[in-house]
Image 1 (cartoon, chains in turn red, green):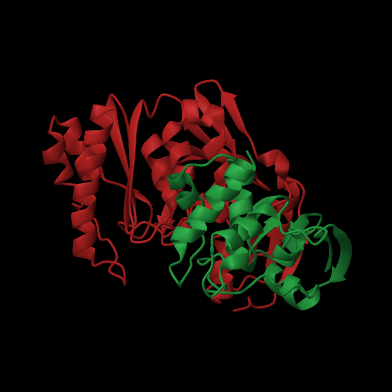
Image 2: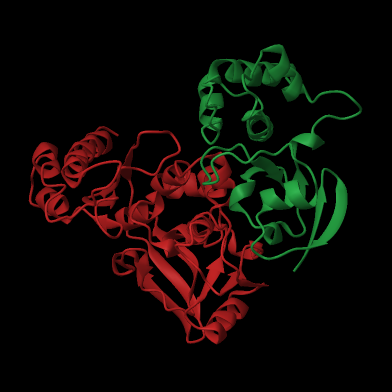
Amino acid sequence: MIPASFDYVRASTADEAVQRLSEAGEDAKLLAGGHSLLPLMRLRMATPSLLVDIGGMRDLSYVKDGGDSLAIGALTRHGELARNELARREAPLLAHVAGQVGDPQVRHRGTIGGSIAHGDPASDLPAACLALGASFVTASPRGEQTRSADEFFTGFLETALAPDEMLVEIRVPKSAGATWSFQKFNRRAQDWAIVGVALARNGSTRIGLVNMGATPLRATAAEDALAGGASPAEASSRAGDGLAPPSDLSASAEYRRHLARVLVRRALEEAVAG
Amino acid sequence: MKVSVAVNGAARTDEVEPRLLLVHYLRDVVGLTGTNIGCDTSSCGACTVHVDGESVKSCTMLAVQADGAEITTIEGLASGGELHPMQEAFRQHHGLQCGYCTPGMVMAATSLLAENPSPTEAEVREGLEGNLCRCTGYHNIVKAVLAAAGAGR
């Protein structure tokens, strides 16, 4: 399986990359680690006319202390984030989830920015960002913009990013995940989650769900129940409420709703115990 | 598009199509066919090579993305007629059955030990989760990696 032909340029700064995108129109795509985009291109499910390779921008690979939040460069690779001491201390849920993505080879190449910009409901990191109340900083010819994770994922593999916009930084509030849990249910070690749950608790509880709809999303019915004083058992029974999970080869929608209830309960129990 | 890389220590520059995958570059352009293509979907790890010292699935990387990188394939591990300690350990512990996954297993295992020189058995199994052995010969593969780690201590 070989991708369809495309033009290829390298960009060494975010300004240069968005300029290239802006000139090329909607058919151009950014290429970071390539671990979401290249498999799609090989299946010809994506056929961009131009790839702008931003993989060489190592200055966008960092984890920095930003005061109340942690600032993570969009080109930080999963393996780097999983091992980073500052991330493990200040955003342990995110660092843990980064270490659960795919397998070691995938984590050597895949980037957090790429995973979020791809907007796949089956990916782990977007759910963790929702649970942590993260925000995303982008660059475009119109300047810098910051959006919350809650307003970022707009449809299946669709995000609020304009065609000439590039995700440059992820900001995670340090206090968000005082206690946390990540539950990933899959059949084989390296698979995407059939259903996953990322839960962050500090006073209130936020729950991000993997593979429970067209986008990465939150278990708002369960969150509301908890806020109203429900027990973990009562709240987790609401985990699938109002959601339309997919039916596919791995699982039916009903089975996914069942998994969401079980995994949210486990996550709540783990976070409360922790 | 020009791509300049060092493959097993030898610098070279080639003109390639941007869509050429690294694994096809290594096999068809460089002529190193030790790197196998298995699943073709980033799952099985048979095509694992090192890019700047880290294990990577070469079916999920464009050759042009490797520009400026040092690539090591299975052919680059042995030196002076001596097997690499990991290759020797696979041989000693019979860490292979049909052998198809072996080049990728050995490359993933050497990358694992570079990051974690003294892994537990569980860490070895986790560290090899990106590599499938369809003969299900994992037991001896794990024994071989643990032996290689012990030899390197």
